[in-house]
Amino acid sequence: MEIKLKVCGMRDEANIQAVAALQPNYMGFIFYDKSPRYIGEDFLIPDIFPRSIKRVGVFVNEAEEKMLDAVQRFKLDYLQLHGDESAELCQSLKNENTGVIKVFSVGDGFDFAVTKPYKPVVDFFLFDTKGKYYGGNAKVFDWSILKNYDQEVPFFLSGGISAKNAEAIQSLTGMNIHALDVNSGVEDAPAIKSIPKLQALIDACNQGKEFKLYTRQ
Picture 1 (cartoon, one colour):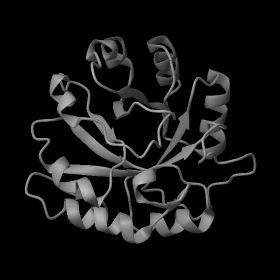
Picture 2 (cartoon, helix red, strand yellow):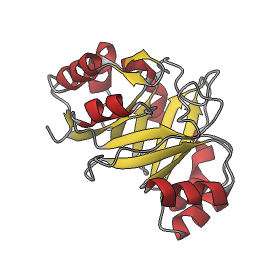
Picture 3 (cartoon, helix red, strand yellow):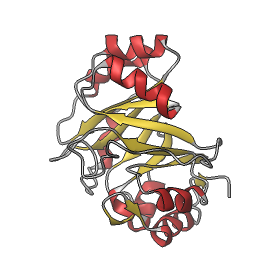
Picture 4 (spheres, helix red, strand yellow):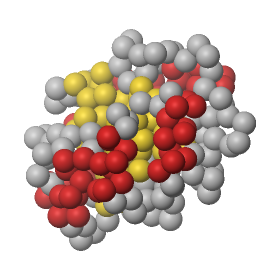
């Protein structure tokens, strides 16, 4: 089984180019101004950004018009929604030919029934650790909770992922994991990803028997 890789929380041009050289499948840019990884007002995706890497814009309870404007301006392939966005909003975004990833923060007692209305109107779910921030909490949730999910919609697995827990990820058999979403677990500083830490994650995952981490290397 092959699982894809998404590197999120990017904004520094040189770091973007260095990470892009590892050829992840997705790269995420945070448009939420309260995040320590917020892209800022003058951000531009480098002109030489590879077309093979899907662009993901991360938003929290943002107006639909502003999100669609960002899709056009930054040529985003997906909108990743971290707030209380409704299934109706997801459907409206899909009607504009935009990919949608709906995020759910998972903690003890999480009820996967809340995902049901979103199943017909998203491309993927993303399960992250419930914490202080909308993503980027650098903490791993109890992945055994995912056994309660029906696996109907493929999902991104997020929350403190690094080479240290690659072995634990390999134990998640029988799950519809589309990609690993990495952020704070592979950073040297907020929004600055460590190339050695990313490479270590890729290498550690690819030593396992259950799945390989698919990049275009």
